[in-house]
Length: 61
Image (cartoon, rainbow, N blue to C red; front, side, top):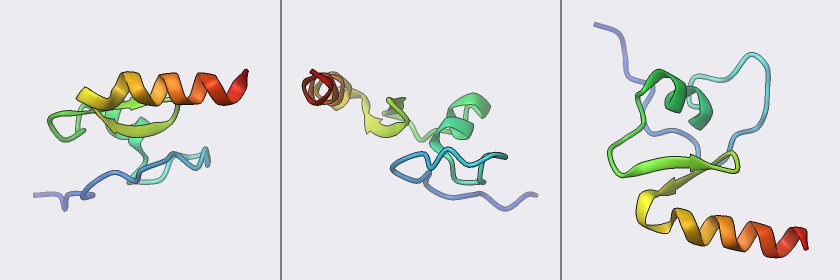
């Protein structure tokens, strides 16, 4: 049995190839923990996903 990579990192570092703990890689492979998603290259809980998007859009404006 393969060793689990553990919890993904909180933010993607954009390295190529993707590191083993990359949240984008975990999303693509379907190995994200339940209740989590990735927004703007950041690992967020599903109930807080909208707040992350609102906060990042305020910074861009």
